[in-house]
Length: 437
Image 1 (cartoon, rainbow, N blue to C red):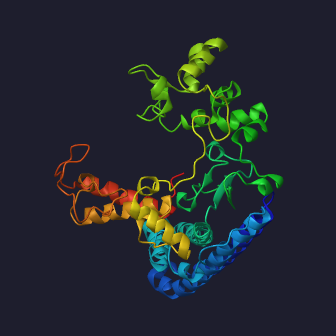
Image 2: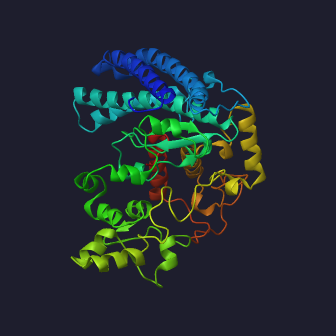
Image 3: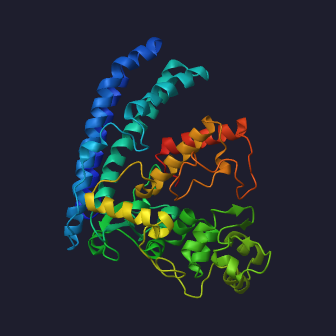
């Protein structure tokens, strides 16, 4: 990987090598799948694929567990861990918490489903291989990344900074430079090449020297106008050039509904604090279209709609600073159970994978989706339970059913459509490892 700190480059390049070797073994085995005897072939070929993947996971985890020490040393800030990560614990388990063998079986299921849908055997096997190779890549990479994250948890005051490895997409750009503790997870999309740099808050000098970028505005202005328009969209890019806050502008797409957006209009949103009662928030594109050549009018509306901020363009955002905390875990760490679980993870260097307080954000999404799906299988309606949050009963299986919920679904039975929706949500997060970005 080019343009990365030495420790980061060595780790990520080695991780790619381990992943490719496991993928090569899987490909050679998959080539022996007999179209007329899919199940029989898979029974024979599954063990060597599983063995190769387990070995790759352990190797990746071992590298991830030691990477942080060198990354910190490179920045002149090595911090001793309170405990060591056990790489062997990563072998044989998928990043969703399921047994790895069951996750591999998804490739056979995908092949049979393709045939059932009318695909020829060659096309179906190609689809099955695509599924299998995706599993191999994700499980090896996640083993290395999660082990590195646990090592971070064991080092007091240490976290990671997300940095760009240009070119980058707008969603990644606005995440650049943020400092996270271990439980924040690392949001990524399939082709994301952003770098997870182990560091302490505000200390990324080594990464800067090697060409990585943690300032979204620095990256934006490194592009010419055409490239800015292509990457961010013409209207959004113009809004940023006109002084708009890059975070407000890019994030406006999340709640876009036609000419308007709901982003920032919630109870705690900045836009809601400046908009008039029942006033809808226009997107930057709508503002420019409405004003045409009247630039002064467009700038006035960009301010009135919360895109140009009084604090100006500030890396990290001018509305609030970067504050390290316990994230979403137990009211930001104020809940005693959350702080105790965090302290135990840091002290031992090993997380309790069944404890919701010590899960990453991605792991927590998968866990909650699974528990809701299990609740549906048990005939319960997850919507009636207040338990899917940071409470002592996160599954909601022990209490809460039949109580009034926020949307008034007191005692509402589980419908077939609801069951299908919870199943689909669980499948989607299981397949992505809990990633939503």
